[in-house]
Length: 119
Image (cartoon, rainbow, N blue to C red; front, side, top):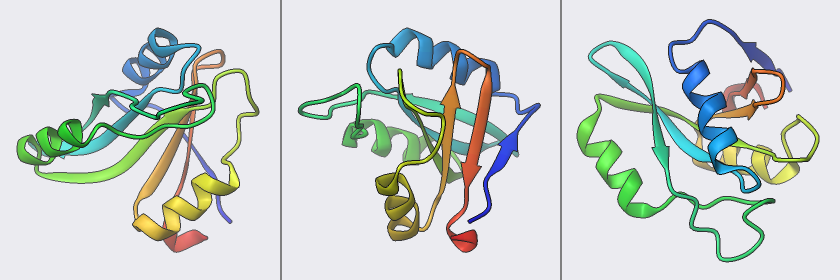
């Protein structure tokens, strides 16, 4: 498995701020391309329980994003108060959905990603 650290993306500061705003719950969002630029589409976490340990993107947020951007290229979330590494569930979801997963750690301003082709 290859894990890459992301730096100098336009939405990095937004992702860190969003994760801090959502704390102590996991943040979740969609990384998309609009007008040839990567953006972060912030979404509501509608997980029934354990929002600090899981996330479910609100379907209406996904639909709104899909209707407003050129392409969806990834899913971003955080792990508040947990290790800065992808969980087994993250890896399985990345493979199953065939989409890049991003993990943000606001305390260090770091973002890492995994891609399904590298799993």
